[in-house]
Image 1 (spheres, rainbow, N blue to C red):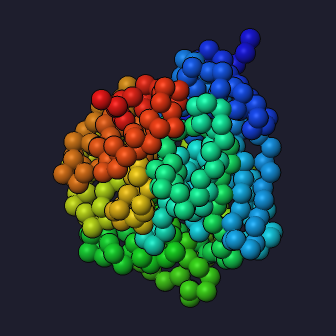
Image 2 (image 1 turned 180 degrees about the vertical axis):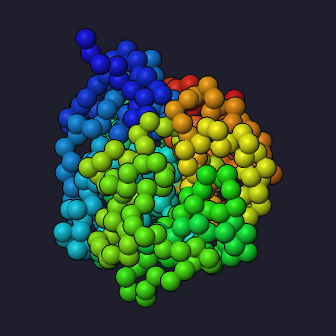
Length: 412
């Protein structure tokens, strides 16, 4: 009996009419040209039905990695199924790096880009902002090559898989660098409000973890450039941890990247978790909402007002920052953002009403959800109509639409 195909968390089961595992771009083109409806599956790290279909499902994991570094142009080109963890060592060995990474190196580059996935850092855009070019197979099976010089580029990068099958991504690269990661514990809650901007800008990348239950922020993870001086002896009342920590107190830190202020290559510090381990808790659901960074303190208070609903189903919550960008469907479109991330216990029935309550509590801040996580409603995007026009031109028959796209990007 064939094992059921699911996403990473196991909360979404895929049951397509046909599952394709092409090993070449030509095979992708042939499949798409002969299909009525198509969706694409990357590494399966989404928590909703964004990749679901009852028709043809294409996994791009079998495409040859084919990593090409172009030192003259300052770019690297990779196949659509390549994961960040597979790319970063090749880059570092060649003397290069990416500007940022997400908390998990396990995710596919094309999938992360298509959903606006991000790391943290007030001056750092999401992972999609590193994209310099795309190659995608469109509805008629033809190959479309886009660069930043093309008018459609800003609409095609964060595309939710609704424009075609991304078979190749070109990313900007920079000289490699080193990062030291230090974890601080028990930041007094009132200090966060009083010193939010100072805390958020205190390192190259900053993440705060909280269970929203008490009067302290459980942990603050500072990832600082090693040429930026030593980590502070304390952080507004928070003290350095006396050993390695996992964001979820009950989990072993063995899966986490090295802490304690020990310098190391960028790709071994920017993610929270090591590639060779199951990230986070493994058994979980995730939700994430983005609000303007200047609304952060008020948004924290809004979450705390419904903490009695949040904490019973919460494993841990993370607060991060992302710089604004100009990508049409990016959750950070023209808005410096703060991310309110929630890692839930794996109980969909219990979690969904809490997610609805969060959407209501944050409504005054015009929250935008992470496209790949659990949410109910997405707002209308300023360039949403432009995206629909682009989709109508590239995919007039709606080959790449599914129920998720129909709900959140309706055509009429």
